[in-house]
Image (tube, rainbow, N blue to C red):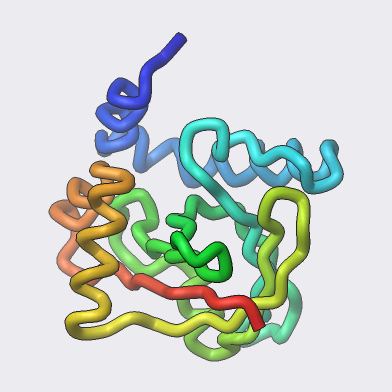
Length: 156
């Protein structure tokens, strides 16, 4: 069985960043659909949600499998717009900036949420929490010049 540290080390590499964005979301969407929302493949290693946001330009629903950092209150989650340490913010982050009302599929339940971009000291504290939760986020930030966006999702 592959250990968490091995997965963290592999997921910190540039090679993983090139392949993972094309493979992991497709697998997650397929498994999630086949299990009627009960299983998210990547969540076997890291908690995850399926984010349904509204496309910033199209206005159409966009479903994106994402790792998340569930908060202790049980009603909020952190989403990290790391894009696997690739340049450019992921599209879902722009969608949330334009349309902060969204929903997530969390452990088989659809939950309406409101998203808020974190800034300042609140962002700094959330970043420390996210890196403690999943250390590869630090490697992703080191590879890019942009500040990785962090969102707090709260149930509506």
